[in-house]
Image (cartoon, rainbow, N blue to C red):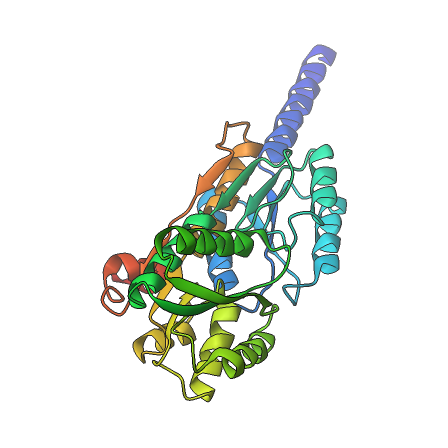
Length: 325
């Protein structure tokens, strides 16, 4: 009788242990997805991509970013907070390619893998880097602007913000291609920064237009907020459509600027895929799979001529294209 009771107890204990192990194995992984900011359309698309991966892969995404895209201290604090909370992985678009190195490497030392998206980080310890080929994006902008200007005249580059690796690469690619392919185009201003908001970009743009607006034939701005600020300044100055203007990224307002003729072309990324691939890569790392150190995402030049093609619409409005299928 005692033997039977002992056997029953042993079976019960064994079953409980199996159940406990099953619960452990079914623990939902938590992944922090930290953008540079949360206001711009670009980051909302990144978030949508992350949520798509969350649904497909059965993980939990925590979306949190700085209010402003120049708040390095807040982004550093967010990374540190998520390390303290012991999330399983972090997907980060660093505001600064140097300032975020230390908190990221501390996360990795504590066995929290970090996947970088959008903008580079000067660290060898990251699991992967998922982003646009930003140098090529800048080159594309130079080719489009040079063609629109007929290879001659004067142009300006309004930069975004210091220590932002993604936009610095675009600016470098633009300058490199302009010098190589369009030697008869003189770049009369390349050292001004728009700042991180549309409002600061508009003010800097207005200052440049006040100085060069009557003599230039071309403009390039390397991200959504700088492009939007310049568009406003062109409209307010009565120069909409009079200067060849190429921007970077897409939002409803920038697309409207393209259709009304203020903007000649937009170089666009695939932010939804960036968020999706970032989370997907983080999960692969957690599962012990080998991942590529560099994962490129889509890049395209949008003009009035190709705006309504399915390929372009899938980049600038993926939710609408998905609904058609």
